[in-house]
Length: 224
Image (cartoon, rainbow, N blue to C red):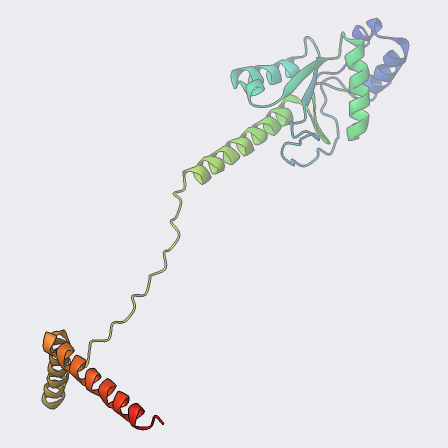
């Protein structure tokens, strides 16, 4: 970790100069601050579902900052995580942002490199690199799980077996029943053939004529 020196702070405003000068007197050069790093909680997202920016505050010429930048570059981390650098040794605006963000996460000292990820922060090249590696590992695990989930074959829904209706075979007729059935069928056939015969109609005509003649005679006898 690199500490802000009073020579470099001459270019900073009076208020910020006092702030950094006091902190420099309270810590030795390159000493790791006594902080309680927050636990890893995974990536945070904003109200629109986008990942919160990971802020890394660095100093131009700081060897520990260079270690972080080298790791990020060699592992193409910026294409996987929304990391943004903020140089604070020569940039008064970034110094003010540093002071604001450090206060928000509860970091009361000054030193670089400092990583701030939402409510999480890490100080020093080793802890920062370990934090980034942890995020990348989680990201890889989530990607693998998603791919495995997509690759799972869709199980077909079990089809219910359609029950076939039971067909009851016709009961077998006894010899007597069969003979009676044949006789009935023959009788019906004979009646049909008889009705089709022209003699039936002739006989019916004579019978009807006889009935009409009888009715005429009976009516004539009873006439006064």
